[in-house]
Length: 457
Ligand SMILES: [Zn+2]
Image 1 (tube, rainbow, N blue to C red):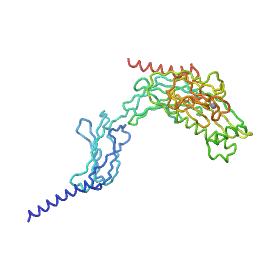
Image 2 (image 1 turned 90 degrees about the vertical axis):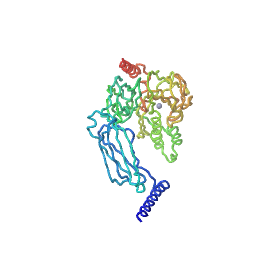
Image 3 (image 1 turned 45 degrees about the horizontal axis):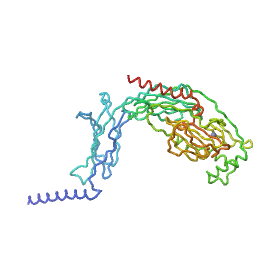
Image 4 (image 1 turned 180 degrees about the vertical axis):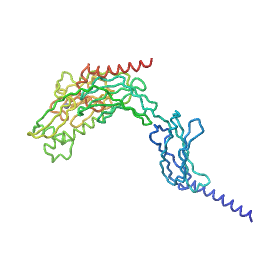
């Protein structure tokens, strides 16, 4: 009798185990899945904010989570969290590391995380997930030191800097201005050293900029660039719009780029071309010229940019133009480059080697080429009648890249020439001045290089 009962119970157990195994192997719902512990393998912390440990389970509620902290090569551990009967499928646990940890001057800890769920069908074997993560404690901010820099920056002009940024866990380094513009920096000579060109946007009244270095634990250092600020006044012009102009180029461009222009008045056509279309064209130029590679710079030299032989300047950089028609103010814009004119269809030369990053039509700028010369420097050539280059070409110094013309918003045959630093238009004459290039770039890089290499000895 007793034997029989025991036997039946034994059979019952076997059936139950087989059923459990069968269900687990056949149906997703019953499948034996452990919770997921969603944390990275390594985390950097400055102990100012708690660590977040996320545990998720797609099949059944999470039951227990236990988190312990230990030193590497040490078996004694501290329990940081021991949550029981959680009964949720997705939780975020905030873990505060003991301050004591840092006082011990230990830089690495191991966090052991263990979680299990309450899947009824696995009562014989709990579904347990385990994960180990390395916690790196770093409360030291990056060390930033300026090694050399331009003496001054002119409104509408460029300047350079060479600096050192050191941190065991450095994450990012960049330069940010008072208006929020971010200039990327490039590795210079060897690890831990950087160089950059920055520019004072002529449309901004003031300029200041800081090097920002941030490590993986979130510690931030800020070091201001100390340039002497040289204000410069730019021309303000008033231009009376003529019917010939409005019925000619303006109407053509408005028709070409705006489908809804049929009901436009003269004014609306002009506003569309001078404001809406200009903005779109300049946004494209900004997008193309604000990207830079972060290749290491070893040497940098530049020839003067003299794109058009025997030419005359016919329009100034940053000329603030106010347009009126029969005495009524219509629109305004900035002329962000210089206009150079010689003979019609004159050859345009790039005095510096470059990569062609743009070679096509661009609205009011007409047929245009944009070249990248390295170190964040781009040049723009607009209103061309033809281009000798295609996007992606690599050209040598002194190459003829295009011919001047009247494409886009140009009345007479001329070249619109611009020099941009990471998307910011600068006064082209600076780049046609040997002394300025030497003082503002070449000497700054040379001095920085000397300091960096002497520090080796
Ligand atoms: Zn122009």
